[in-house]
Amino acid sequence: MKGDPEQRAVQLGEYIAANRATVRAAAAVFGCSKSTVHKDVAVRLRTLQPELFRQVRAVLACNKAERHLRGGAATRRKYSRR
Image 1 (cartoon, rainbow, N blue to C red):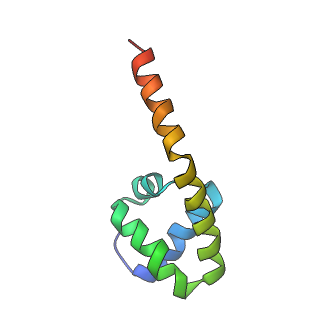
Image 2 (tube, rainbow, N blue to C red):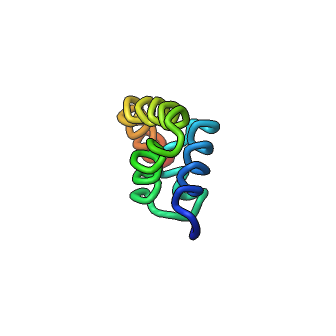
């Protein structure tokens, strides 16, 4: 996704907040890298829309707290199919 980084940051923030999406999921939807998504929502969004930044930060903190469970579930699904 090319274009204005500030506009992209707001769109990514709104998507993550609305869908409780992970950084990887948002990157896949918007067609950019995880690094770009993280930079947009962690750095640019803070100055552009502080309230949206707080919402996104809460979603990402929740995702980070749950990531060990998601990894275990993915491994369980992978080996139970065999």
